[in-house]
Length: 111
Length: 113
Image: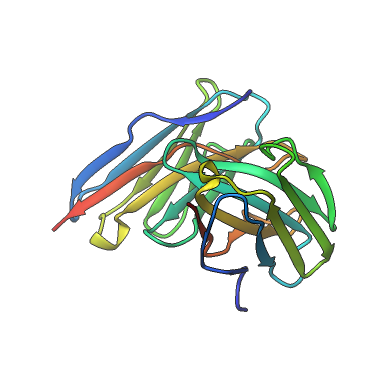
């Protein structure tokens, strides 16, 4: 079936650097994409989302970019902080279906 | 708002026993989802409900798994009989149709020995 994947299972950055986490998806019919953050022992927490009629959306210190041509999604975190250390998941869906999650990228921020 | 509430937080049971996981979605949300998380398979959708009606249960592993949503404020996921390979963290999430994203509970860590 269709799946969502991530390019790298782990990413290590220094505090203050910008982080970029990538995700590739395979279902060209997907029209909704979302990034979640999961800290140890907790459930996934919503970060930011984007619909297929957009290619960029910004939040507080985070930006999501969507490239439908190559079916690629990325999450950019500005001025990464130790509190950003977590596992990040991308997920996708199309109308009437539930979110399908990728396997996650572990972000480690060292100070 | 207390968020999505799951119980119990941890469950240890012996193989062959029945296990019931519980979820209270956010008031006003009309969709409810059950996911299972393991290191090997990540977050897998088991089943989801819309307005208390099961919409897609294709992710339910086998007949040992069943889920119900008797009303808008409560859902259960039952495993009978449980097996060691069912050990995982089970998450419940809810959303409002047309809203943005799902809100997840804190999960139930199930260990079957």
